[in-house]
Amino acid sequence: MTTQESSPVQAILKAHRRGEAVGLYSVCSSHELVLRAALRVALDLDTPLLIEATSNQVDQNGGYTGMKPADFRRYVEGLAAEFKFPLQRLVLGGDHLGPNSWQKLPAAEAMANARVLINDYVAAGFSKIHLDCSMSCADDPLRLDDETVARRSAELAEVAEAAAAQAGLPPPVYVIGTEVPVPGGEASLEQALAVTTPMAAARTLEVHRQAFASAGLRAAWQRVIAMVVQPGVDFDHSQVQHYAPAAAAELSAFVAGQPGLVFEAHSTDYQLETSLQALVRDHYAILKVGPGLTFALREALFALSAIEAELLPPGQRANLPAVLEQAMLTEPRHWLKHYAGTPDEQHLLRRFALSDRCRYYWGEPAVREAQARLFANLDAATVPLPLLSQYLPTQFAAVMQGRLSIQAQALVEHKICEVLASYARACHRPEIESPHAGLVSNL
Image (tube, rainbow, N blue to C red; front, side):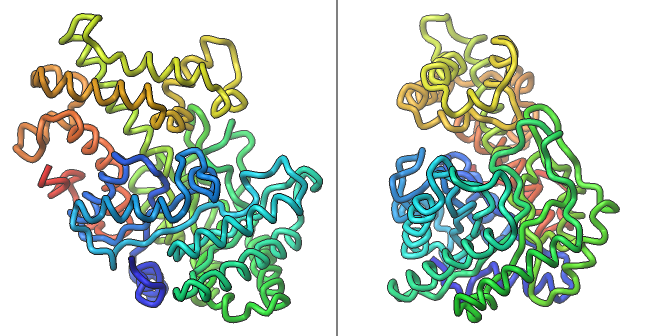
């Protein structure tokens, strides 16, 4: 694992501040096939790889993945070793670290949990920490003021500094901000935040600077590398709010005048590649993507299920979409409060929403078993090329060119690679014109 002093994060951001058109994409997922695809793209396009665990995925109690921070690090490094991916190019980050998972508790109790969370992430070697105290707890006002957010963030930074020192690790770099998009996308774009004003960004920065100074964290403040703002980029269940550079021009001009600082753009899922390039150009030098990757995963798995339905009689099929649907109905807590409407409308959202709440269910034993059976069925039958062309045309083209195996898992990973490659090109290799040039050539 890379150390903070030699971190590609800092090297890339320094190059960006020197005027180079470079940035860093952040893979916010714990799914094995997504991470395998990310490793393939980073290897093939020769980029660093930033992987971030979110506070509800991985925490001191296991999160919804069942992994604690040290478990997640071992898991990612095990995959990297399989690919012979250089650990000096791998960076682990923590996303939305704060009281997010404990918002229903009083603030004192929620922050006590958040302190343990931060300690465990940093002690496990996560070197990029997003301090997110923007959410209200049970006894808080509906919307927190900047001073409270900053004070709580500084409190967690103090824990992080101590954890790194005790573990003998370099201290981490930090991301701050108060206008933070909802993790995983909005319920409706009508609820999305407006573009942050330069005045609001300046106030957020100054209030955090003062909070860090008051806590005796001046050295840590020098490692605040980015701030989360709202550039007018977001998505909900069925719509995407695309980046409009003119609307964020004043905000971009503001950060250009802040030495050593860039913006971090959340909810960039489903943006056009030209928009991703424009975001990097306008100093949103860290691009976060998560649901868009598991959405591509789901698309590929459903496409393979459609192929399976053409090839096999009902009794032999894995019926993955139906198994996934049953898992979501059996345990609705990950989607019920997010998906409104009639039963038919909710059914459609569970399967196809851009917010992709089904990503929480791929680890369920019955779903994992159905996926494994789907792969085994198709690999045994060998997918006919006409069916591959019908349901996965881009992968069909890669197979025909001899660049991709027709095995089921390889097809799924390639589908995810398509999305990741657009981020890699926007951040590091805009001169690559083809979305498939050299991509996953060793599949």
